[in-house]
Length: 167
Ligand code: NI
Image (tube, rainbow, N blue to C red; front, side, top):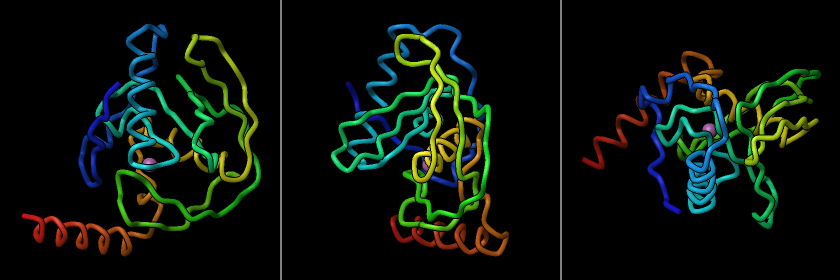
């Protein structure tokens, strides 16, 4: 296993659109293990392959407080969504930023598991939010893009300033 480097917003590679996984191979299962290890080490509750500069449709999640309930979604697709909810979100690619985002309250997702088997999952609340957030990553979208242009401009200025201070 390996801890991978997480791309940091506004890295342009975060806008890459991930390709579907044609077959769940040993290599993909290795990617899943590395994603999980990277997410747990961060620590975080979700990570998409896009965030480690691998542009294949793979996400891992663990919203349990015990951090021992790994959920793996390969080629995830939201096939049903309903309701509306607004939750505060954060992202390992945008450290120290927490903002409210409006999303569907409930989603039904279809994906492949690590064995390449199709499964369906109905999610609501925090799990639904996380699934939508991570699937967005696979589409090249970072949650801060839902914020107003003013907030995005301020955020970019703040990050530039932090980078200058680090340099
Ligand atoms: Ni994220």
